[in-house]
Amino acid sequence: MSVYTEVYSSQLKRFFSYYTLGELISFEGIEDGINNTNYFVDTTQGRFVLTLFETLSISEIPYFTKLLSYLAKNDISCPEPQSDQSGQLLRQLNNKPAVLFKCLSGTAISTPSIEHCQEIGHQLAKVHCCTKNYAFPIGNSHDLNGCIALAEKIDSQLSVSDRALIQDELLFQAAHPMNDLPLGVIHGDLFKDNVLFLNNKVSGILDFYSAFTGILLLDVAITVNDWCHENNQLNPEKIKALLSAYQTLRPFLTCEKQHWPILLRASALRFWLSRLEHQLYPRPGNLILEKDPLQFRQLLLQHRLNFSVNSIL
Image (cartoon, rainbow, N blue to C red; front, side, top):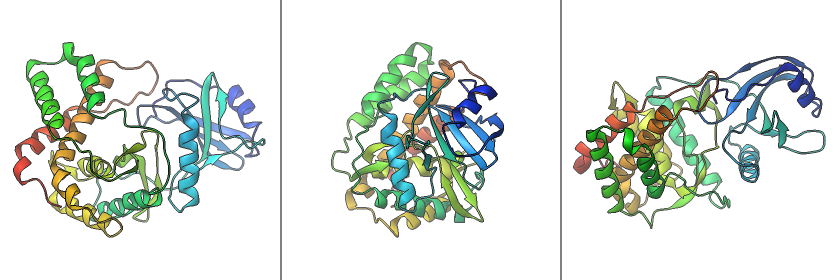
């Protein structure tokens, strides 16, 4: 959600002429996130979020807009795509695919409480249960093979110690396949800055563009690694709160409990590698937000150190 593609007032006025959402008043770039270009747009009928897709292809985007429409219609608080006067959700703006969303109320929480962790655990399980029978043909581009490809891409710029750590973890993950774990549609990037709260309740889950059909427990591990991390450590009470709330809707299977510490490590490795890639190969644009890779390097080391006692499910 950094601004890679600049949009001008004249372009936006023409873009909004295809909708019945009021006349343009003002707009500003949104600097959170790293994948797409986003703008807040105010019109005479309210505030909207305009997304210009920087990496997804035109053939892929409809899968995500249909998913968001489905979730919104099934009581999941997420951005619902707005259709133009001809009923289309996807348009072009400044040579980029673009979709318009009604802006959701609320703010992101940078330091979640135990209650916030309970709420996000419950909401994540709600998403997983809602999409139980939903066919979503997008696969995981950051699986083991994806991590190997990322490691190869950045290998020449790594320190000796980082290269050794990454290679050792890749070997560990390869030795622990997870073929029998429950699958479903997962968010894939449920970090604190992708969730809005209003009166301590989730009012919006954002940025489903990393979603794919994959291991449900991986989604939980990704969420725990971010929401329960404070002062360079994972908070056991917050982990317990999040997992307990999640399991009120979808209890974990025995096989999931056994793989929990492995998936915590897999999640930390995946985001360490992807943040290193963004740091070493930045994309041109304005207001680009760069996230620190070291957080996930430290998390990976902690998970490896505590591996034998890490399963608390």
